[in-house]
Length: 197
View 1 (cartoon, helix red, strand yellow):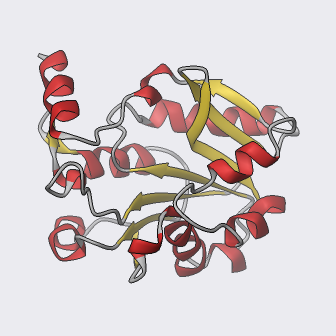
View 2 (cartoon, helix red, strand yellow):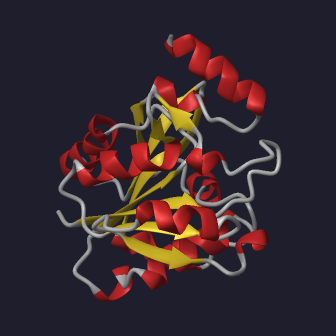
């Protein structure tokens, strides 16, 4: 199964006050950690959607075998970044059978988590495979081609959760407790870094 990956990194990091995509965790930025995890899978292409802090982020990504897509309307929310990732990486015109969507502020995302999503997709007939944590479902999530149109019709800042809610009876999930950790504030960041030491 041919799978592409879209990494959402266009946000303003308003609550953090600085570009959280570039925060250092264990000697590597949050964004590079997710990119490296993606590149350690068989997925292609790997697409990073930038926006608010593209001037700071893009130079860090040079020489990496990835697509970089700019979302000039990043303020409109996560849905716009998903659309830009789908269109800008030409996923629609390729033989891609599914796409994994993830964000750049989840430090526990690893290649094994991404590979588990793909394995679950291969083993089931489900078109949507989400991650499950804290009794909720979310990203990283794999969505197969029959639902690409739904991705392109998303609106607002809820991202793919709108699809998960609409088709909750048709999806399956993998357990990913680390998905509960996302770094939105400086307090989140310092607490996480301290927990690693």
